[in-house]
Image 1 (cartoon, rainbow, N blue to C red):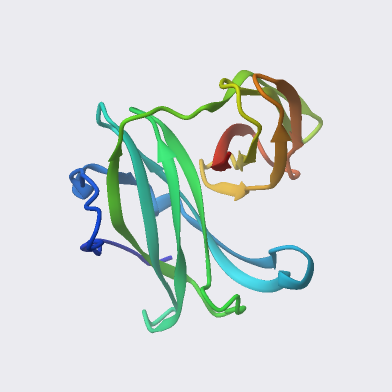
Image 2: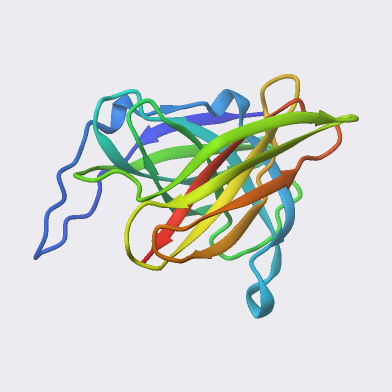
Length: 211
């Protein structure tokens, strides 16, 4: 499986210039990325598309919004499709799994590799306000189950995308299911994800948060 990592320049807005961090510091674990084709989106936006699961980590001491993108490649490194951008909040030292979907939601069964680009790493002056607590994972036969609480730490109603990543024995991400929750002010609730057969480890993270 081919993997290339690049760091691209971020576009600047005319009215607001984010404080860019050093994009080269972001650790992208492309050697363990996995390529999938399956159902993405919901409702009328649901489609069969190819996507890449890849982990990235913020090794620094700043809160960052990190954006990844890239391209899908065939066995001859020919570009088959462009991957849509995804941005995730990474706290200092935090690792999360990005799910980079073909930007036309197209399926590319011939994809065997990908380029991954760190297109932006913007410093944030706040930590995530909906957090994961009391994470616990356990074996259930030949798979892993992970459960935790998600907690809204402020006095505003919020919506949050929560996702789990399940890993195979070789450390590669197998699956990244997600669920959208609405949380009342200062509320918390339990969440559980069941992994695929063969999973040996799991994590849980938050994605988009909207108040």
